[in-house]
Image 1 (cartoon, rainbow, N blue to C red):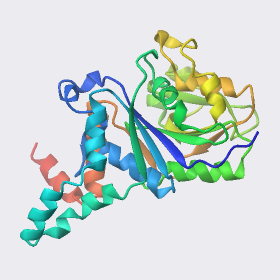
Image 2: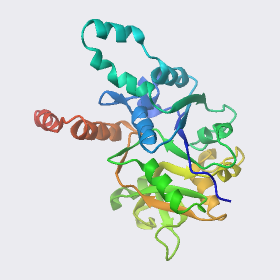
Image 3: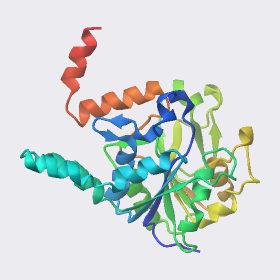
Image 4: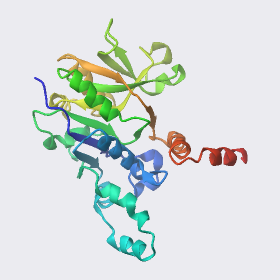
Length: 292
């Protein structure tokens, strides 16, 4: 069965983010800033660039009201104040947020086990049985391109695919830190399986899988609370790997540069890249670094 081209995206930020405590006691991890924007906004912008019409953010109970406020509160009192000061142009970034595609924020179903597959399963009711959809992990940011656009364009070329995943070539010395793709023998685009954090010498390739997927509703057959894997968690990668038995899972390479913000060290690197390349602060960063 071929499914309709995606118009919906699920963005997940429902974990504990324990590596960022204490700040994530109050603030969702994806609300940490890159420049003047939270990480979540950059992920939403990637969806908007690709023509996504509806976004479902899956959050923690504490994060839900924060995201709802951020994406829906027009703060008209600030607009009035800026207008009275002749600074109304500073309100433009807020208008951009208010003009994003429809955004619905939900909580992860508390009955599901821990794991990155549970937020996706929690959004099942928002996905029609005849439509494909995209999934984005909010701690993954992509510079220079929209992976969502790449996924959709690939699906238009391969409508028979059960799923499509994005990959990035990584240096050999870090292959033991990520999920590494094994391709089917003799084919450079079809997934065989994903090996989680292999020994460097056992890595089946240098292609890393990260949180950008195009999925069909068939994935929900495997994102079942009974299908837990490593550490008794519900893993998206496990579900995608099982779909290989049902048909083709396409592997595409990113046209941009993926960086994770999943821990403080990588977050700092992503922040510096954003500040240098987007905010144009590269020279200032170099000057400041030389002082230390």
